[in-house]
Image (cartoon, rainbow, N blue to C red; front, side):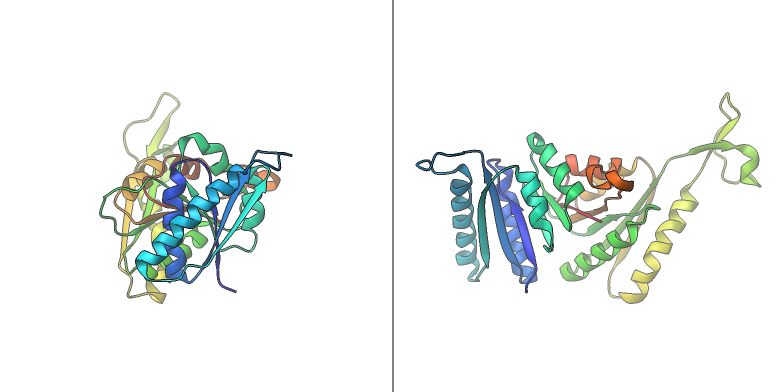
Length: 280
């Protein structure tokens, strides 16, 4: 069975961009599109459900895309009643990806889906005319970094674009005697006697360890690295402005993992500068 890409269809204008992006990905991957919309109507059999109207419009859009490109796009649709976020999470099981349009009014939908989905989730902002190139991936010390890097490498290989690995750091206050020679101390101690410590070497080592398998397995991929003293979300957002896609990992925290996102993931997904894919 081919990969299935689930697209949440809403009344937001962002749905147009999400469907077009998902259709292009379906063509590239030989995947099947699954369009899902929910309707609030209950019991009125004479009314045409909102979900059906939305799906008809998007089916027509996909048919137009297929005709223009001279290709066939496999599409399945489902109009349902109930909470759309819950329905999308259910449909994500066994899917290759879920695609959502970005709309500030639908943060709750995106956060619920990203935190609960069983597969990667792509959040697609409005299309612009920026010439984009490169696959950006955020690297930290979490267990999902390996998954995020593997996904990003696959994207870079498929697109024939460079992989841009980024790691941010901020000075950490530590007692001066913990740094040995003091080479990594920057600035003077605060009133508590703590010194800001330069963690750039730690971040650089983190990136190199994460990329070593990539360089060995994919020597054909151009790999760029960015290690900066910066807020991680801000660094990733800045790099994503000129990138084809940004890949971030979402990490869980115990029994409530599916209901919470990390602060970096939340920030970049709430205001994506490019198509942003969250993996776990």
